[in-house]
Amino acid sequence: MIFLFSLFGNLWVYRIFSFSFFLGVLVLVSAFWLTKNLKLFVLILPLLIFFQVSTTQRTPLSQIGNDDRRLIDLRLRAYPQKFLRIGHWLEERKESVVSNRVAQNFFEDLDPNLYFFANSPRPRVGIREFEKFPYILLPVFFLGVLKLVAKKSFWFWFFSFFIPLVTLSLIGNKNSLGSLLIFPFFVSAIYEGLLNIKINWLKIIVFVLVFIQIISYEIH
Image 1 (cartoon, rainbow, N blue to C red):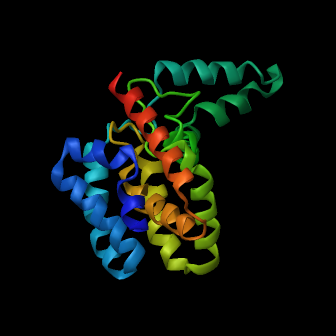
Image 2: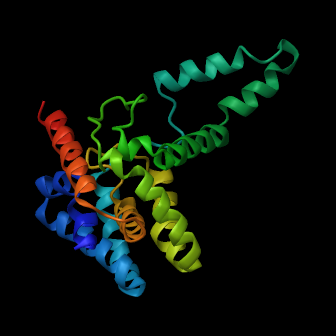
């Protein structure tokens, strides 16, 4: 029952199902196998990566858009005149642009706001943000992460967190469905957190009210 709640007690999974029934089943199966059998999760991970890549609006890592140009010019003005040549080397070379873009993607996907607060207060341009998990589950998620650190192996973290995060850092996260690759990890962490707290009717009622609030925001 607790695991089913971890799977379905979020808006994210219903958004995925509304886009593709097959993809919805895929992320549910991925989350299930990550929690129950890591070897089977590893077998299905390439398929999940394929759908993440194919549904993501990708921007070349070395491409400099108008907003990027504005930020680069702003940073260049902070360099003393005698170091301006170094500034151009650090800020405008292809290697620097690529590393900055990868770092930006990396930290965006690490930000809990992206998953629990609709990326507030930094919504992305061109993407309709939504609360993937009810914000009331954020402490539960952090508790679950601590428990996973204590009990799970290196390979669990490598396949469920490191590979998805590296992939998302390279392809970006401009995806109306969100960072699908990280969904199984969040479900696993929330499930682990729920196993370590006492659940009563008051907490259930509060969760239901919060979930209704999130749905009402989504409708409007």
